[in-house]
Image 1 (cartoon, one colour):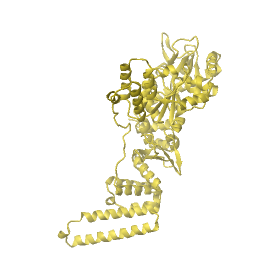
Image 2 (tube, rainbow, N blue to C red; image 1 turned 120 degrees about the horizontal axis):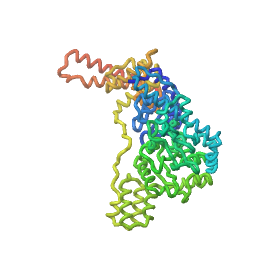
Image 3 (tube, rainbow, N blue to C red; image 1 turned 135 degrees about the vertical axis):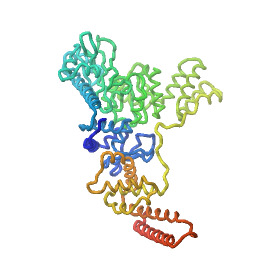
Image 4 (tube, one colour; image 1 turned 60 degrees about the horizontal axis):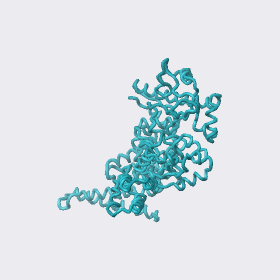
Length: 578
């Protein structure tokens, strides 16, 4: 099995910009030396997510998640540790080295790298053809006719595929790629005389993952060209249509900052909206959002606005995608555009009108119920359709409002009105990881947090503690690890750092919330010692059975208890505000 070298992992850790990484998932707000935000892993209204950019740690006081950059990517991207390191290495341009790598694992990694490079090379080739070739004049005219400027087209890496059968194949083979790789990348298909270019005479839209890597292409037919109107890359090892959200790599920061995403249907809609300043716009790959696409959006925002043209918005397929979004806890609204006008038409003609349309977007349920009520079907058929919709929708204020609307419009009896909904299961997409802890354990954790923040200044406290001073062995183990971290030259292995990252992140955040203080650490130290000696006093046997040794033990424990109380009082006297 392949194994990353420790030096490679450390190089990735050093390269990570924690604010950049986390800021792609949630909007960060600076608070002193740290940043706060709403947690990207569970739904919350009040920010409880804390990031330490210097230590490159995060912790959520709401759901309990925390750790380092690797933990964050594992959680956000559903990857294992090695996958998270590789993900970050690609993002921050770090070359990874492997040890004890099996030939098969090395072959798969090399194959993936080559396919990604082939796709990127193809995008570069198509772009050059678009802007330099006479053959691409119709494509340039098409973009001009749609009002798309060259700058935004270049930002999205648009291109043009030549009409010849083998231009891409020959260019790729000249760089050392073979026919099998061209087919795997979806750039060529089998012809009677060998592989031929899959895309010919088309306007090319690179389909990129959230990191900006080209995974495939969407290709638009030019006037007089061969059908179909749009031709996508085939499903393969790097491209799955259901997972792609077009434009997300360009829109991530705007979506996270605004808290919402504008969902459109077409590639040029995305370009036109970005050109007009609506940089939170993305497109579904077809009319319906898939579960994977909704999950990707849910990581970045809390609301989506569906901005298809009037006819497309009425298609049941697109609305089913919105049902998925609603089920995952997203607020869903539908933008009312003029019939026959797509978002690009509206925004390029009058950006203010498009802004007004966004502001006037109606809730998903109100939109669908309104359509059903206006459909002109029988009263029974209308009731059944609405009941099916509302009963499959989680309880909300909007759902209650639509029950009232339907009850009034259809003049329903109390029983029929009550039957419109079935209570939705009160489940959360993200399990709450909070654990109820005793005040004593909270003191122990805050003490350890102070030790993490104070570093070597707290060594004397840690050196004077033992396992009996903690409520459980795991916290004593943590104390030992924290002391080990500050020993000159001891350091941490990559495995140790990642293993301890969630707890260290929590302790670091606890100390930051309280404010790192040597005085607070000392007060907590004496509280820990006091709790420990009181535990020992409770464990002494009944006094009737004592001998001289037990009496001496009792006296010593009582002396220690009095000493600890005096020390504690003295520390508190120096900090009366506490």
